[in-house]
Length: 116
Image (cartoon, rainbow, N blue to C red):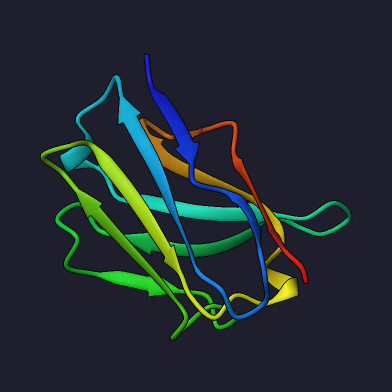
């Protein structure tokens, strides 16, 4: 079965950096585009970044463009999100997702808190 396990979240000061990881299993990782979403209580879930199967095409939300970088290692079945210049408004639970056979699969998420 599809499994997505996020890690790397934590508490960081404004201006700091974190690298999130997502370990994928149970499907052909290299054959699927992947996405990172985030959600804060009381707000709608936000698509942060997406990456094509081979990693050659990436798309970012305006709120993170220029600060976040999505990448993947298909040999290791890993998805990453490098987050730089973090702001308090980046505080959220971050999820990696994959869509297969018209179904969306989600990990349990990892909490990122940006605070001084």
